[in-house]
Image (tube, rainbow, N blue to C red; front, side):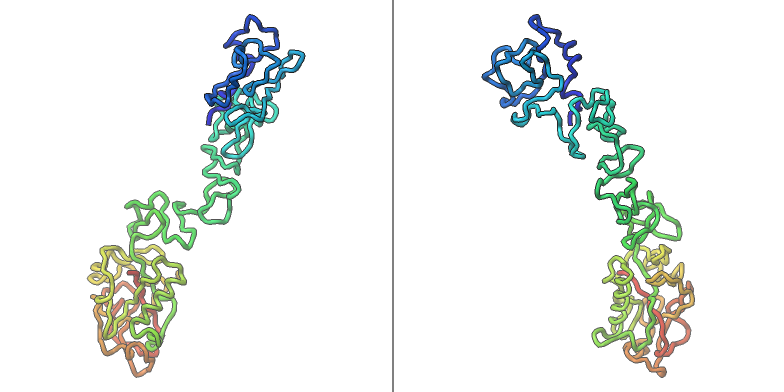
Length: 381
């Protein structure tokens, strides 16, 4: 966008540049027409065209005239021109519509003098990122322009104080990824400037640019199940436990909710056989690192207890159905509460006790009756 002050020079400046014509009678027109559009030139005009400083022929009409002259020979100082000209010619007020606000600036906007209809004018200092815009309007929150050093954003009529990721009505960034605090269910983490880098607390994991953990999520189920409640008519044995983990992850709005599996074994399934074994850390929903990788987990056990539920509660003394050894293999393929569909007190299976014990977290020394309500460990794949 051209600076408005370059579109038209004030009359006094033009006289200084061109000098008065020898035939100037005081009613001469001084105008500048920089358009190269053939439509801007009246081919029927006489030689002494209004684009020179010579006295115009008052009987001839020109579409490029930038000032109207009355029959007395006095110059109309309003600077009004014909509005019927083609694109590229001067409009009635010489205005150029603003791309940002739709406001039509004064013809003299940019001359450094605040004129009627202008809120400000800093001449060549007018700037859409400054205090006085190119339209000679004072910058304000809501005009769709961003004033450097004062506003961090401006979405005009879309400014919103409650919508995540929006610009507030004070033209400051609202809740968003990169703020440094988890503010929305769509975020798993937020380390501010540390997002997407290798900078994170030693007991935690990296956080990506989208505020998602650079790790696999795991949690303790908030719900408890008797041994026979894990399977159902649609999902046999361990498959029923997987579905329960997926349901809880979905309710908690965890990313990748459909790809969670339970740390549980029966005659056909076990974590050793079914889990994806990646060289990525495991992390709780609260951002605490549990293990550096699959190998670290099965060799050393959890660094921190898997005691945080999908709902955010910390349950440090929970009992968990597992029937699984520390290496991820099944403990006893026959002690599975009859494939996790019988809650009889006469049946028993292996369980784990939430903690950091290398073995006890998944394989306690004794068995648990199948009528006892216990939790599940749920791992993202």
